[in-house]
Length: 334
Image 1 (cartoon, helix red, strand yellow):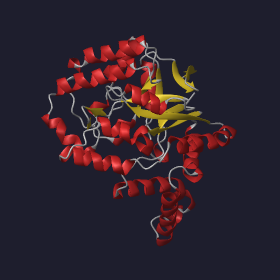
Image 2 (image 1 turned 180 degrees about the horizontal axis):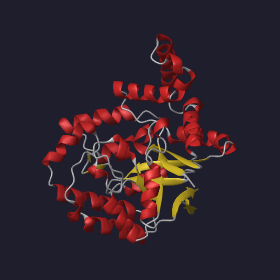
Image 3 (image 1 turned 90 degrees about the vertical axis):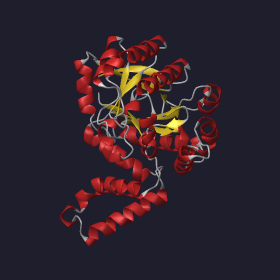
């Protein structure tokens, strides 16, 4: 069965790049109605109106989510998990300001601006209620819509994080590491800091963070295990196999799952899914349960490269992936 368990509706920052990418997504679905007039004045007027509606209505609109449903049906997806980043919720800002580097220096200024630009949703309940309101509609059209959360892990932040995310009707919670020592390493504006790092030490620290996130027992899925490679800064993988083994054994010990996340393969310079083929071999050796994730942030990216991900799973002797309902894991045949 085809599924995609790591899908976002929006992120920001709201730059001209965001505007262009949103326009591209809308055009992907609308162009079939104006195929003969593409790039005409009529076409751009229609698209401009659609963009205006999208900005005015926001990402929690039925019209925007309907595009994800349309794409899911085109691709034959039977389950889609919509997740929201924890840092998008204004009620969670204190958690991030405590653990991110936000000092009055170059890095701190960039990250403070970023956080201010992406934290646009007042409350988790707004997201939860919207997704729940659409689940019956999706079900009636043959697609199960799951409710998820992607929560950033910071060492020493476990108790506060638990208070923020508990007692909510999530189908599953994804734990992720996007920050090392307060530095958001996947932000294009901060990637030059990689050049100042000892990469082996950096990867060792990142591995420690990932293992601590697993040991916290706050999550159902541990996301994109080697996303530190996002901009291509990675030692020879032979030097990282010990790290891969450590993560795989820790996931298995705590009975959690991870994912094949194709987001980096089409959205970032590394052009490789998470985990890498070598990393996937280690996870398979330890029989770590996996789900499938495109990490789409726009409806036209839903399911991207997941056919290749399924092929990799078959090559590593996986016959099942996992899904979730009300925090309970279930096996699903590939």
